[in-house]
Length: 124
Image (cartoon, rainbow, N blue to C red; front, side, top):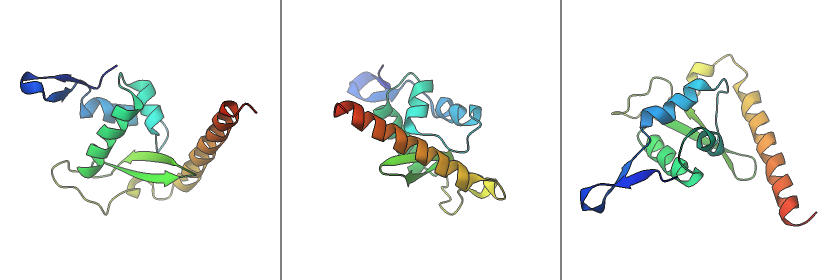
C-alpha cells in the first residue's frame, strides 16, 4: 500500500498521520520498536515507515539507535516539542528501568532473525 497520494501539482501527501505512527509507539509495552514492528501495524511499507521515522527524528519527536549488525530501534523522545527539537533528551523517562536489557533483547532477536533469513536464502 502506498504511504501517500498525489495532490494537485503532483506533490505527494501522507495518508498516515504522524499521530497514527506515534499511537503505535503508545500501544506497545516495549520501550523501543523496529521499523518492521511499525510496518506491521500501519497500512504503509517498511521503506515508507523508515522515511517517516527519519522525518520525525529530524523534528526531534523520535530517536533511534543502531543495534546488532544492521538493525535500528526507535523510541519517542520524552518532553518532545515538535516545533523545537531537544536532542539532549532521549531515554530520560526510562531512568531506573531495564531499558538497556530491553534494547539488548531486541538486538539479539533481530540478529537471530537476520541469521535465520540469511541461512534460508543461502539454502542451509
